[in-house]
Length: 195
Image (cartoon, rainbow, N blue to C red):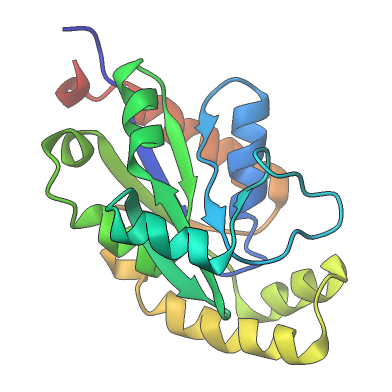
């Protein structure tokens, strides 16, 4: 049997930089980015099938009923989910897939009883101090004040789940964060359990 790929679940509060880390490693050919399904509206510049699979609430719930999701959750009033078939296709080809998902989704994937998922699984939590997080959220200029406050409250709650992760990356400088993230990807690729 050829080597399997790694499933790296990357979680952290909105604004922690997790999406940037996942996208950059994908752009540099170090990983494949898991494209999640969501019921939220596209943000300016986002494309269906590139950033997310944008679904209606009805279509999303049909996939839930059919058991097609590896994980799914409701976050900030919107549904998000990852198609199990997409993830298994990638790891069977020996590639690393990064999954940018919240703590609820990570818990579902971590608890999955599929032996291939369990064998290939790893996770990292991106932690960012609250004052830095607020600065980043405001700097994005994509959310209203009430949304920013909700995201800050949710971040404090998500941080309580940090101990459930195999790795924690304490965010600071974006370049240093990415350097450490690449090191983690390299180390995971050397795991003997995937041979």
